[in-house]
Length: 323
Image 1 (cartoon, rainbow, N blue to C red):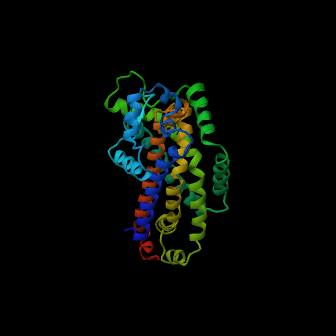
Image 2 (image 1 turned 135 degrees about the horizontal axis):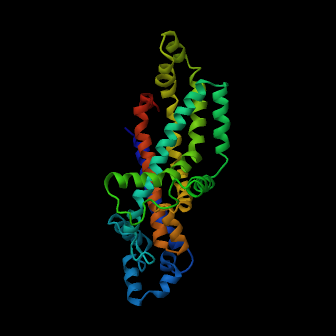
Image 3 (image 1 turned 90 degrees about the horizontal axis):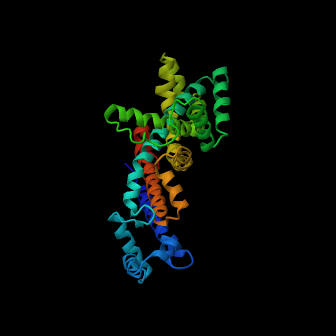
């Protein structure tokens, strides 16, 4: 269970996210409606629509009343109206969010698991050839940004070899259902997921390897060896498990970086997630969509860190008694 202090911290963070989302358009110079919808959209609005928006956002009232109206609208799923997509922002985001959750979630899980396994094996064999080879290879990958790895994979496997799709999340007008649809989605996921895994593997690997080297010197590892446990048991059940707490912390903190990386990767592969939606919103100055995406992403990162805190005591019961 989380302590009261942690719960209060998450509530404060949640309120700050709402407050910043509310204040930023209103702190910009000029009419708040222009900051929210853009000058091009505002010019095309009829006087009746402007009056309706002023009433909806309570722009003729005090900031406190405006914030109350903003929160009330937000909890009803009203994030504004997209003038480019011509539908509510909430519907636009919900149509793209599952694709981003699939891409980011799958890449985060796979890169974390792969980084943990490689880090444990590398730390166990510290200084030997497999360790030196892994360390050199992964550090080399760490020097390339997400979008460059994505472009490289796209050129090799999409253009040169032609074995994987170049863009999108589904084959247009295919009419696939069932297993065929699942395989088609999986085939479109291979390149963007691989790009994110390769770009974010180094952090988990290095942290696990370094923690593993420290844990191997602990007294309980000497006890495990004295009890005659197998090397696999020593490596994973004792050393590996105790190396995972810092990795879990890092995974929660790095989720924001993975989401940011997904934005560029989605643009490279024209993947229809929140990253590509953000690019479209910036391109067409669709401020309501941009504001809604930033709010949803911030809340998703906050929720992921909350889940990480809940998992702490399951992974290491000593955390329950920490002060």
